[in-house]
Image (cartoon, rainbow, N blue to C red; front, side, top):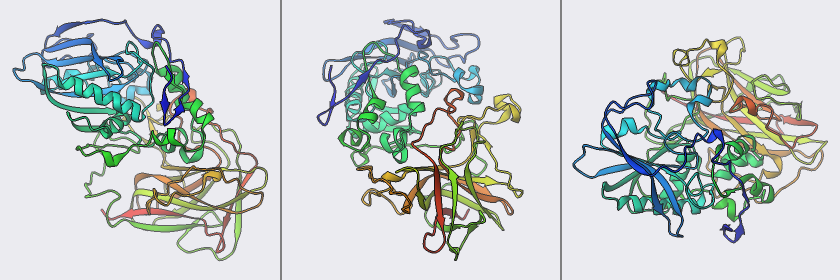
Length: 523
């Protein structure tokens, strides 16, 4: 069936067959089972703390006649109707699908004994929450597995589906009418769009690490097509029996911002319910952060944004260098995203005292090139010790990974190396209406190519972070022609492609004061 967004026909492609072994799928299984307290899926799994009624593959009707499927786990001994926690995704429910902690190096430090095996990926575990008096509802979204229809990638369409599901669940005899949504990544992103439709029985949401603008934050960050992870997800992680939205096909056909991509930008002004929003730049999932501070707002009130100017001797200065200069790098060298790629300019500043960097940074670079009409520019903030040894942060305690430092795989889930910013020079036009003083947002409404030899100003937002620098430690600012974060998975190394050719030139000095704004707070 043709699916349109703002009169734009949406391209479709095939999902992975549910018959694939990677689906870990046993087929449609209707029925109600009681899982007694102490029940274990296997001896290695966490037992249920309370006797739980398990309803499999219930039907949820949507407004267009489509029927989607869900599993419900609810406490058996509750005399009252119970509230529901809903998790929504196309990944597979209640232990099915490709995604599980077994495919992540070290299981991110979470042993199998901590989970029941009935949890959806990146969703609450029913073995824990039914004992707390909640029902857990794991939904396979439209088109996923046995759910009818074609799989949608976010936007208003998925939001309306969620509205219908919430309102149907609220009518079921066991439900108190109070429904919340919770989950991570896709499960978080979907919450934003569902909440924006304002289903009356949705009481609150808990989106954990979910973007709110699919174009600018995921598939085309900074105007650079960000394809490896999205392709992996579409080709290996989405299962169904019909079609799925071809998100990368749409990016190729519609590389400029239009109504289709605007539909995948959350309308926050439409959301009025409470939201418990979490995001991490590394991870505090498995242990308390070393520094735990509460602030009244974000960005942090009283943030002191300091300017560091790039100098020819690769230092960062508080004042503009008086003499003009240039530095350059080869923009199209191979990149494996293992924190060892070449052709990266690195500028350093040494702290005389302890400092706290918390929030958004922003780079302003004056750049040119002669061998191409565009530039994909990547920047990053790093922390180095007093000897200029650039550091990495292992996100998960080694005792939980059960590894030595040398054994921890250099992938993004395991290690954090610093916040990044990205911009394609032809997309340098800033949207003044959307931008904030601390965060430039680009319009992506047109391509403005770079004439040979012309110096252009690039304003590049750097994602937020929190870094403590001791006296003698160094702030490092890097510029390159390739992505500098670690790859999400080992098979994705080398998969990120840019449009770069030849050398990129960074201009310095009074006429072209390339610099970076860095946020400092007092703690």
